[in-house]
Image 1 (cartoon, rainbow, N blue to C red):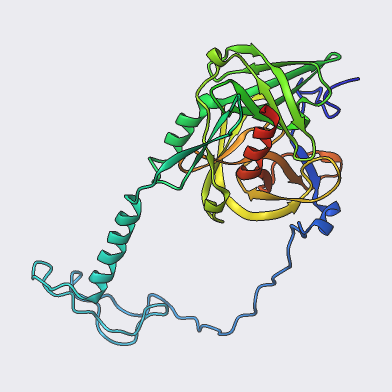
Image 2 (cartoon, rainbow, N blue to C red):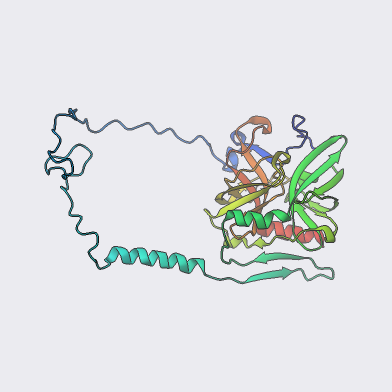
Length: 338
């Protein structure tokens, strides 16, 4: 038995991100990526040709142009009255609107929120952090810097082959969430932390229907866990970043937006379609199991699959990636660690 079945011998690493051939997936609503043809409309007006040098220049090179018939492309407004730039003017309705927009943006930027934690009520409970919507702190580069320490690379060795995937820490007990297809086939599992420490991991459990798996590493060596966002707070157009180890390149960060919600695709075993978050953030083989986070650094999904135009699963990102929604991933992880 070799792992993974799609291991890429050219790079010495597996392609653990599921890929779909869009030509075979029309029945799942992915559609034709090419789109309709839009021919250019015929010209509606023919402009006469004129010698641009027929009109003599003004006698005074510093004088304003004469009023009269304008050249083509110049509005027939005449010369505007610019007035005295130092003369005081009262603000009109236009300025009031701009001021209102700026005030609204500032108010939105300082709107606060409360971060909570939901804890499983079990004898040996596991706390998976879930956040309410709060203010965005800094830019995407700041978010990436905060999140990267909690993202890990996962190496699986079995029968002389090696697969590579991604994952992230979900609690302070050292549990790491990833995709089930990253660790399928068994073998030795090693978690590579952001600081390049290599830690042997134990497989806690898998949910093949959801394509989720939980690993365990020593709690003393585990970085801080990430927080799950509430899926109800996710909106189409929200900025997101995907983190992981595509093609074994650990610490890779790509950015995009939420392209669609509740997209029907096949993510786990069983052949049935389930809903997923669609994003145009670049996701490639090796990103599987890594987090898709919002501008607050909260996990909104687990990167799982990409669409491809090539039959047989070849090719990389074409800007259509899919992630397991955060609420479903969190609930599945809680069931596995209990």
